[in-house]
Length: 426
Image 1 (cartoon, helix red, strand yellow):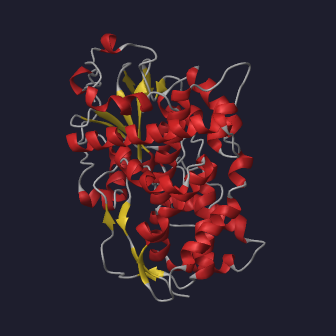
Image 2 (cartoon, one colour):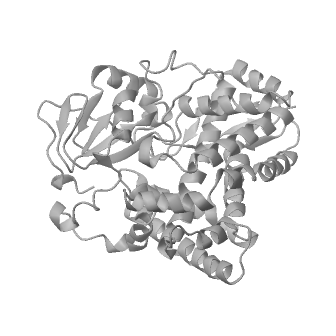
Image 3 (cartoon, one colour):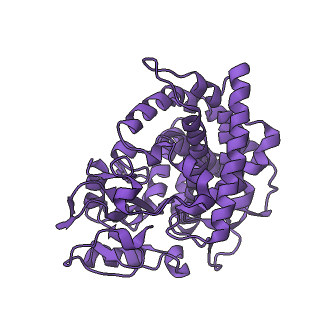
């Protein structure tokens, strides 16, 4: 975080302390965020060295502005910023993290997104619909009526791993490592992490990097109909994706796409179980082939708004800018609370209610502007097909224990349930 080297916040900016490691906050952050959004919608947290931003309009303005960016190193060197040399213990992670869309700014971002977009097309995503439905049906077929199972490990985690492996062209014998690698790598996106987590993340990057480079070499020799092959072949005005950029893109697809889908799907099902009339709406929609696709599309967007799977993203102030009436110096780091923006009553009517027919639904779960999530269509498709399959096969699906507190992991940036016992009932 380089905390002592960041510019001081404006003297008039309110100071607040937000403990993102508090288990009660992780379990239900929304009452705290609502109070802060109402009282101090922009504040500085000295412990996190972040200026937190909570209102929808303020966050949307930051996301659309070129005065803010995911990286600042394209404008200033580490020496100019007064930062120490990169930590050698996470050298592999740093190389990966500097070669994907989330960590670069225009013009590099513009070039890379254009090239990737030629390979990772909406047509390629839509062609996965039947495959995703097959995976969902096969998984649900293994669950006997009345059986108790863990929704996280038994359904939500295997689905996106299999889909992403199919998309990339990762052979079945290599797939067992993808979920552990993803879980280890994303730990470094929390605001703090342990030395052991740092080592595990770096080791995971090394392992995934080696696998991907072997697959890239194999696809260059013998092309297939998969995304790795498409990325090796894509070209625009003589420009191509470098191998490091290709590797970074594939890792990002696994990490960001997988974690967001697992957590979004699990949180969505928990919300539906707690709002039984909403679940019954989906069960009824699943019985109608004509109305099902649009109904499930609208429902998924509402579930992603209602309980945001990636609640916090960071941005650097690249040149002096104003947020909520406070002028921030270049080099300041801001924390954009998507979870708060998605429940802002100034933007959403009855924001704390789950309304599966909410339309329009301009939630910020996938961001806005330059860094709008390229994988959003795939995440939406996976959730739509998964929920349709669940509602069709197990209309009586319910929590195994309505009184048990949900089990969340220790992180907030990557916020998700670690277990969700369910009962599969027809």
